[in-house]
Length: 238
Image (cartoon, rainbow, N blue to C red):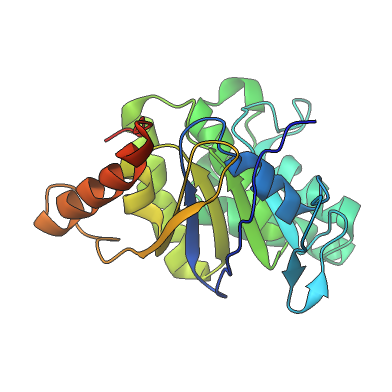
């Protein structure tokens, strides 16, 4: 048995973007999967609005890193509508219009009738985000969803996620090993130690929504890199 994380305690505030940042193997994804209800904690507890999390539920929806999250035989609109149909979150007569609202939100209305094999990696991730948001979860859980994208697409997706958040104010728990991505996205950033992961620090990110070349952004990256390098494990990007 391997201990992935140990003595980790934190609270995600409603409506914030909370980032888990740390080196590979520190247990970031394990924590997120525990919040999702996929992995029960060996000790302690996870709760949402005072209710103990014991299994997956529609109040927590996960966007994974892989591009094969979509049903290949359904269109962009069909993928979003199908999730709504299965979960019965929306009346049958409103499926298409509700799905289209979120497809439009992520900028894919012109591609609503396209199939996944015709989409780029970034577009597929946008569909996955639209599908997740359409389900109306309390929390959106994102496990390094942009890690496999090229640098330009990744930057664009980070900007789009911030824009989507400004529209929805959805609570987001985001996992990354990139310092730059954490500073771009996180209202608060939990910096973890190498595995078994522990909380090194929880930082209020005053540089969120500032230009990448601003003094505030550069100083925040430097501060986080110093925390990661305390163990000689500073592998974050940026």
